Length: 62
Image 1 (cartoon, one colour):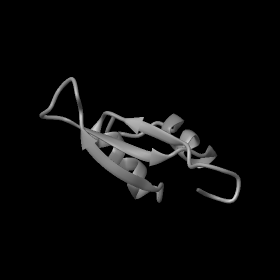
Image 2 (image 1 turned 180 degrees about the vertical axis):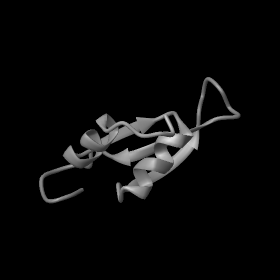
Image 3 (image 1 turned 180 degrees about the horizontal axis):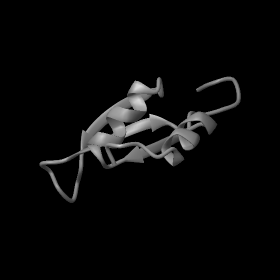
């Protein structure tokens, strides 16, 4: 829990986007196996305004 309440989470399914978000100092909470595609992972980030803004920024990797 944070000061306001439970931490909101955002799932990211693309590894290159997850790496870019981590480089931009967004908080990765954990990763887990994708239930539909067990060879892939789901990256779970703390959802906040910075994360959403960074997801909307164009990058060369995705």
